[in-house]
Length: 284
Ligand SMILES: [Zn+2]
Ligand SMILES: [Zn+2]
Image 1: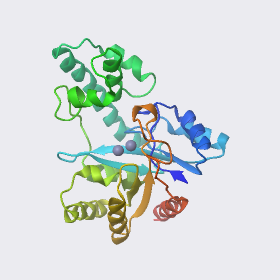
Image 2: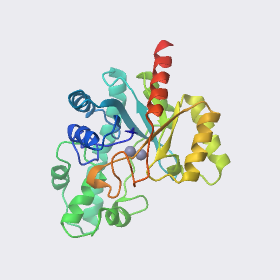
Image 3: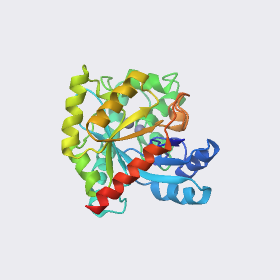
């Protein structure tokens, strides 16, 4: 069993990259991909820990791309995370995140909540500061009862303190991953909120034209029907099939590493096919 979609403290997970790798060993995973949001900060630590624990580590990233009214995440596997142009591109996203945080604070304060950016930064410890850390501070101060409530009442799309941030267009996110030798994969397609199968198929066809190379078929939140649909689409467009839990540690309750909500089981052969694709890319 493997898990190709996880987050560490380098983004919005609660385990350090090394702790995550140790946890993967406990869960008896053969391979683990670290795919933090818009950052490759945790990859070196994860790769080192993988060597130490004897677990195969797949370097990855998850890039948020612009998509009206819904969420489009593109996973990038085996990106060269020392590639200067790639690092410059993702630093644009880091900057956008950092610029967003003071705005969220101002909006929360305007709503009469007692919260400062310093408190949120402390909550994030060493990783990038994101909305889950705002939620934790609000939780500790008793403004909400669960992190989920923080998103519903204050931080999520459509809520009063929601603040949008710059994202790459999908075509650019794919290009940036390819430029760094990586394999771009459409993450959890259900978040695209497509209304018909034909609509999703058009999106996938467009993205394949832009250089998309895979679809995340196995995922904690995917129903068996969705898994079948995404698998068919992947086969039709000659895309690799990946899968993962989207484990965030304690930040997302009910999702376990490797097994998701309990029924997830990503076969190692997905990784074999992914690696074969990497070899193809490097040959050309
Ligand atoms: Zn995602
Ligand atoms: Zn994720």
